[in-house]
Image (cartoon, rainbow, N blue to C red):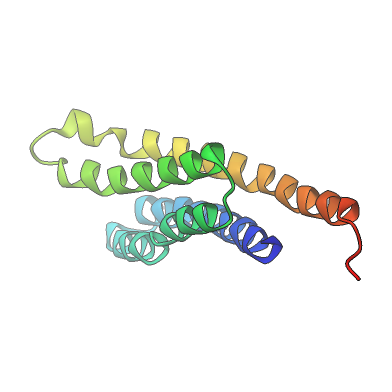
Length: 134
């Protein structure tokens, strides 16, 4: 199970890095020209699978409700990003939640990534307490 926990932590950190890159790409669209928003959009679709992978890894590793719930929350918030964009013409006030939601994704992803280090410490502690097998 420790390899699955390690994979969960690695994907959590990768997701956080991707979120930071996504903020940069959004800024590029604002300050370097609107044509750069296409890169922002495509990159979002590219790393959008990471929360799904985190959710699967959390379930396979039996990390418990907390980790599965946080992974599911990140997946839900990530889906909402696309929903907010779709609403830009019909409900612009709701669509304006897109950057607010992005900030929420960042802080939750940061929390998950940082706390995922404890999963490795738990594995190490469990390995020390396991009796030696003949």
